[in-house]
Amino acid sequence: MDLVYMLAVWVHVGTVAFWIGAMFFEDPDSNRFFSRMVDRMGGVGWYAQAVLWTTGIIMLNHRGISIEQLFDREFIGTSWGKLMWAKISLVLLLAVFQVIVGHRGSKIIYGYVFVSFVIVGISVMLVRPILF
Image 1 (tube, rainbow, N blue to C red):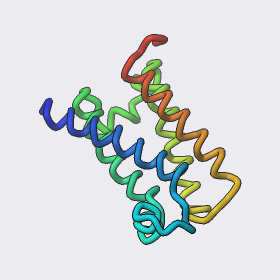
Image 2 (cartoon, helix red, strand yellow):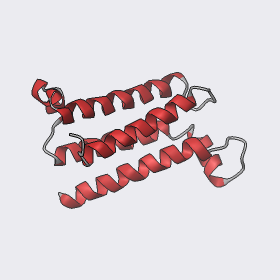
Image 3 (cartoon, rainbow, N blue to C red):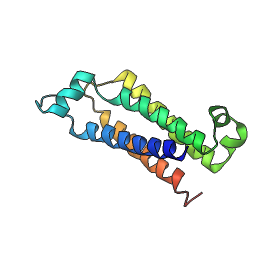
Image 4 (cartoon, rainbow, N blue to C red):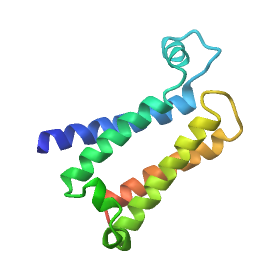
């Protein structure tokens, strides 16, 4: 199980890096391989979300937290649970952005990128609980 957890962590972090990199460096007018590939896929947001939700659930299960426990009042009452729900809420906000804006250009992308970095910061606080 430790190997599966480590693989999930690496895939999770790699997917976040790829997704944020695509936000910054993907250019629809470019003829480069990466830009053509992302444009052909219609963006990487949905694919990244699918991978991140899957690996996130694997990592939570490794910590002994099931999906049912996520909704448990006791879990939500802990500082770790509140932080986890803040992260989940922001990820759901990104999913709403994907539905509304998708791969089209928009000024909202700046907020999207900001929320992505906030999620990364919360994730670091969850695995390195210095404040909690």
